[in-house]
Image 1 (tube, one colour):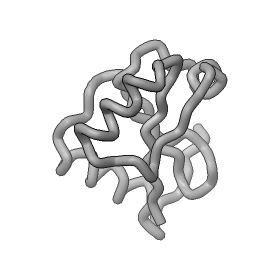
Image 2 (image 1 turned 180 degrees about the horizontal axis):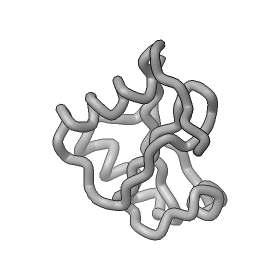
Image 3 (image 1 turned 180 degrees about the vertical axis):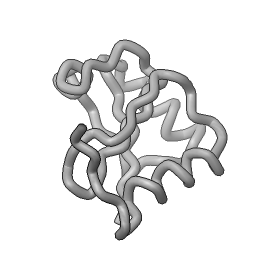
Length: 88
């Protein structure tokens, strides 16, 4: 099972409504007052974080992940039943 969330940090209501109108996405959005940003040490608003099935951060990139095939492969890698968290 995979959940994808869009997190708005400190955006104004009008900006959020414009995003929803433009993308049609409205069911996977989270409003944050920077707590998640601080928790995950996000410094770039184009950050992709994948949390594995163990609940740990398995992947973090602060560059835009616009290649859907690459993103799909990353998600498959970290959610695959054969995936084991490497804690080394």
